Amino acid sequence: MNIAGLVGRTLAQLGAAHAFGVVGSGNFHLTNALRENGVPFTAARHEGGAATMADAYSRMSGLVSILTTHQGCGLTNAATGIGEAAKSRTPMIVLTADAAGSAVRSNFRIDQDGLARSLGAVPERVHSAQSAVADTVRAFRTAQNERRTVVLSVPLDVQAQPVPAGTPRRVPPVAPTGFVRPNASLVRGLADVLSTAKRPVFVAGRGARYAAEELKALAAQSGALLATSAVANGLFEGEEFNLGISGGFSTPETAALIRDADALIGWGCTLNMWTMRHGSLINPDAVVVQVDLDDSALGANREIHLGVIGDCAATAADVMAELQASQAEPPAKYRTPETAARIDAGARWQNVPVEDLSTSERIDPRALTLELDALLPAERLVSVDSGNFMGYPATHLSVPDEFGFCFTQAFQSIGLGLGTAIGAALARPDRLPVLGTGDGGFLMAISELETAVRLGLPLVVIVYNDAAYGAEVHHFGAANDAAGTDMETVTFPDTDIAAIARGYGADGITVRTPSDLAAVTGWLEGPRTVPLVIDAKIASDGGAWWLAEAFKGH
Image (cartoon, rainbow, N blue to C red):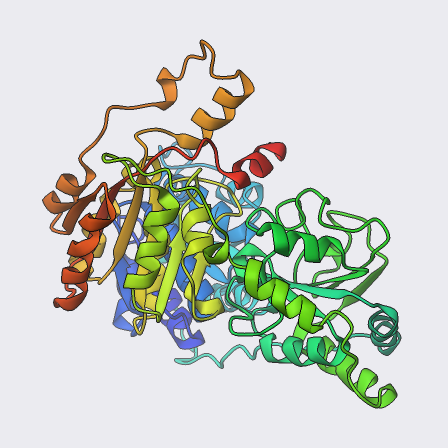
């Protein structure tokens, strides 16, 4: 066995769950070593798609995934997906070849460690045959226990070296870190905040996705309402006092209830400009608290009155015990019948009346999404690309829980949706995968439609097709009152995306009116052995409400 085989075997023994990539000469032996040792491998058509597949797989499974790339150009092709994963603290290893140390003039040579750092990933490398196991274990431990994206470079000359004599055939598993319990004085401080607050609101983010039960119990004990950031959508599904998504996707009623809070607690959530609408959702008199494992996250986006370092589940449990010791009965506080009625009537976009903009040629995207919400099975996994359309699948398609929604938006890149949907689908084959994407993002990543067809995924792709980069059309058109504004750079001839999809081997339909959706019912009743691409010719919404929020942050 050589070092390439040893690295692959070591990662498999440590628990690498699934590998994605495009195989070239540099990562050929690394990838085969993973496969030979039982790690499933999905071949993508572009490294960018493979990176996003790996990212989504980890998000939906909670396991460490692998992206494998060729040295140099293979790694740079994956850079956007790696940046998205790194910004989202996805536990993922980028197993990449690197130019041999002696190959100073190699065309493939770049500063791979520097590239990784610039993307927010952790650079690691296999330095020698003697250190190969230790280097690989260190990379895996960082990915798993620190929830980081790690770029592990394995130079070609090191890959080819023989495994040193005496190298153990097995490595012990990397034990996951236990709950990080908060300091007792900080627990008492948070308990005091909740005891004195009259209208507390919890906003849970990515870091709280495994703390749903503890947070629901604490909210009931403290009289708090529940909300999530966009990435944690579905965490409190089914709860009476669930406000849904906080931020740009909030309904007016949800925004009003959050804005009236006198105590706002962010759980594994940095309360950034998206989640807090640039701070406008925070009452000036509210006490603001953050709970997070990462000290640098506390107060990173806005002033806070109390920062608690600790695991969200452990912190919620400790605060719960503190409150129970001092309260005879849980107070109602914000959980009144009046609040429940307001939530029931107005905290879901499905319940907010809208003017239908449909014509005989183009369908209102809200009407389209609500029709599909009723047609598609409830046990679904919704992935969302980026663009002007993105709020419709995010707000008008219901999800069963936090593992029914995959939102790769930290980098705000269009074109990640198809890879997201494929990786998420492989992580959760028990659910119907659904993708909401724009025509621009879909066409940017369309090579991965072949991957979905080859895998036989029962994927529903909703293409919100306005024949444009809609975000730019609406933003710059509005900024210039659309009078004489040159939009030629961001508008395109209408494309028959359904026909292109059929060319890839998928089922493709064109939707202009609700009656055209009858074909979706037929696909659902069939074997579902190929993806269904819905080319929805959508009416203009004049610029989505979340779009104005997004452009404030540019």
